Length: 132
Image (cartoon, rainbow, N blue to C red; front, side):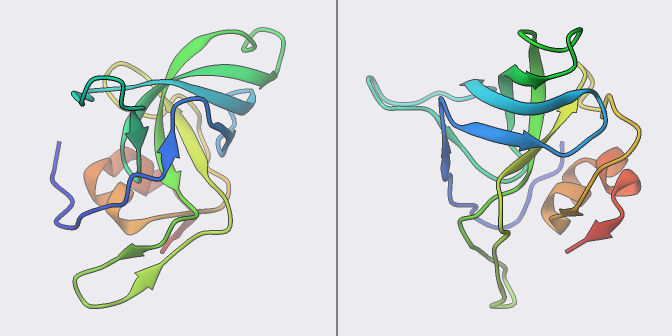
């Protein structure tokens, strides 16, 4: 997995409900745990742009509901600062459902995807219609 080169503010915490931006059948997911998080005792795990989380599907198709799946954050409301000084924020928090090899399970992604995510996960970048 490739490094981002920037420090992303971790603004999405455990228990947050996020929109699912792909066509896997999930529409609304809730963050259960953060993949690879090693924190401080009693600190709530948080994640940001291009982080992987285990999520529970709350709304969606009947075969997808109540399943635990892995997902990558592709948009976050909290602004990030790029090395060239540009500040970027999106109007919602969104994820894409991925498999064990961190490749997307769906075939299309709705809405924009951050460039940092497209660099780290090339398959997500190739499926995205808009890269910001």
